[in-house]
Image (cartoon, rainbow, N blue to C red; front, top):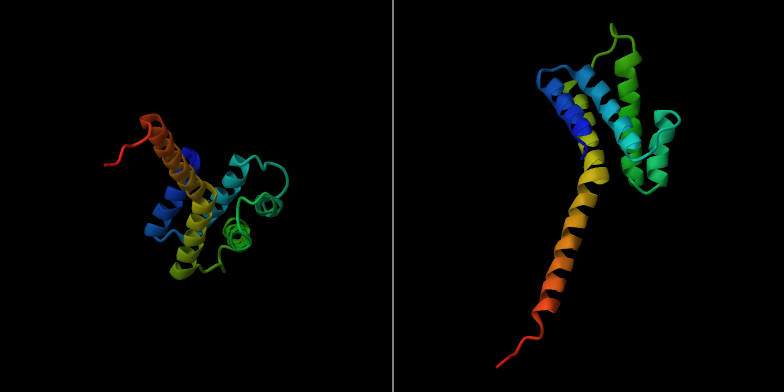
Length: 136
């Protein structure tokens, strides 16, 4: 995962830890948008970027729904009526969990699959270069 995205996600979790729930949700939204941009999806609203991530197969349909939920609560945190906005700990926790799921789907799972494939290819290449085995 790119360092800037990892850093912002970590900051969102640190905001949560000090009960800065609105800040955590606004950062979660920023992380989703930065993730789309990292994948080359740079034009249009965040709503369109999320839909395009799903369209490109970067995220599943349920992750798309999660990203839209993050977008909406992040918008509320950034643009809402602060005097009337009450954010519960459980809601903020849920948003961060969804953010983490999206990051895992876009960055961590593909990297894990690539490592497994590379390891398998290396084992096969090593076995072929070792030549035939003699059994007694």
